[in-house]
Image 1: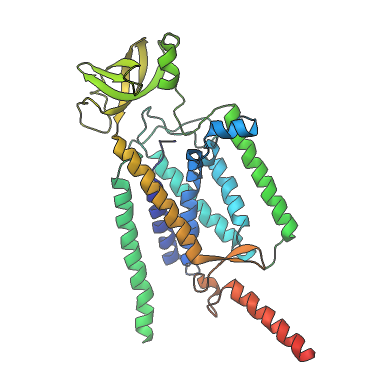
Image 2: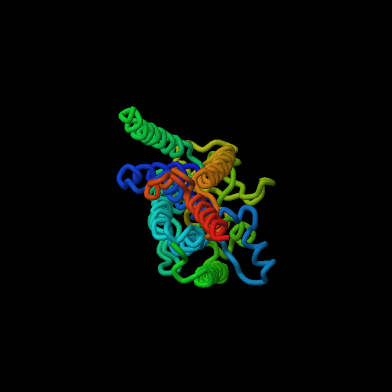
Length: 172
Length: 196
């Protein structure tokens, strides 16, 4: 569980991707950016194991248990499906797509991590046990990914502000 | 837009997805264990039963207690010592050399009961782990705040809808679904009053 990037970096990258999508697709707004952000966070729901460790849940339920499938593509598909059921039907298909974009960005970022063994996690479980070679770009505890993502988010936020301010100025 | 299969269909779909998710969590617990961790034995398994792992590839985490050669202790008490061969040369995220007290994770082949021939070494300070947990909590709070700021719960539809002005596709009048529902409710009420 330590071989996953910090949540803040994922959230910032989700914000950047979501906001860039609003530049491209006019029917998307800040509410939809929030969905990409939640999607980018969703594989890290696995961190619930810090509060309720696998062993504790297994002992409580009386069955073998591991939270780790939440951090696979299959787990993301199921979580995103559940999440989309929580939004209004008119927004559901869009919510599915945006949550999926966010979750995909999360898995791509985590495959870039430096791991002690040189192998990444079993992202395609249960379909495949295969683990991609780790890209060795950064450690989960490195600070620079959050700094870079924060700078990108700041630039995108400024561009977004100037885009929304421009029509108002023109209107005056 | 109403629920395409009604609220029962929605609840049923939710239960099916929950059952599939729970099945995955139990399946992983019964078979592979933690999919985000390394699949090789670690110091918790190796330290008390070294002879069983001689010749195997293992991952050992600990702190450096000697540097020439590099020796780590896998237990906080200083016990569980292993000599790491080529630990400095295989360091991946630092120029090295390793110093006493450094936290290290080494991956390689256990040559004998106390020697690991290292293929990869990584090091991190304990403060970096604290940093990761802190910013992760911050990231979670930011996303929750972001969602609550732009979405609200429509008790009529029993679902989340974008707040007014946050969904350009419904900005003909700039109101949220809840406001539309309220207005429909008021119109029905007014009509009823007039008829009455």
